[in-house]
Image (cartoon, rainbow, N blue to C red; front, top):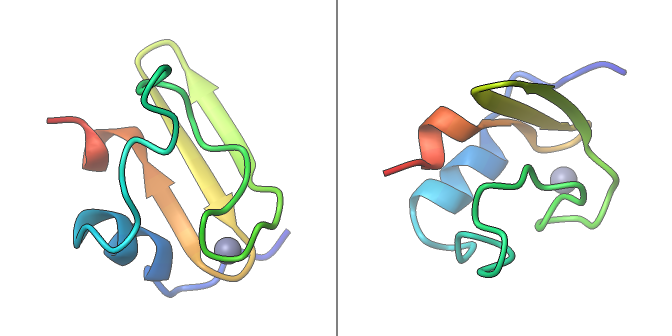
Length: 67
Ligand SMILES: [Zn+2]
């Protein structure tokens, strides 16, 4: 899958436009479905982090949303 250069999803989450966590009961889970368009996301999970990518809205990384 080609991942776009844009950061629409990360921007939406970090600006608060998309409430985070998506699932308050499982705040550390990677998103499986893009909250902007509902497409299935490609998720890579490592022991300490995850990275999820939407083919339209770009990448979101766990390190960006953990506080
Ligand atoms: Zn999307």
